[in-house]
Length: 192
Image (cartoon, rainbow, N blue to C red):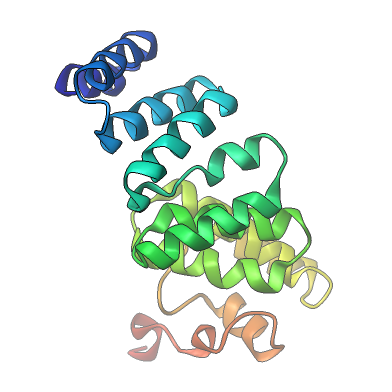
């Protein structure tokens, strides 16, 4: 497993997959080996193999319920939502599951359900710039049509701050397009 993780960390995915396969051969009931190999397949862009390995990992240990990403890549948002919901049920602090479910909700036009999941993902992993970028985009999509295009432009460009948001988002909260926590005034602005 250690060599597989090392190869995975350097982007040598074929070698990582080979090492994880050796680990599976040695310990066929080790869920982590299947999950790790599935993650390497995901990085290679192979959702079918990712689903196969993730399914085996889940069968061995349900806490590895993260195959939703692969279903999303295959264009199955309903299965993504179901898998991410199960992962959240098993581990409510799993930021990736909230992010996957949010993306699936947005894909099927259920932004009202997706936005809280995107917010939760960022709350759980505040330093994740990838999630922050997507959250800014999702907020702007949610606000479109209810807030001026200038405020949407500003909101897209401003950094995500949690739990208090920018003045643009407080304006959006006043209109009811984001959650009540957006109405809180940032501490640095309150002092001014």
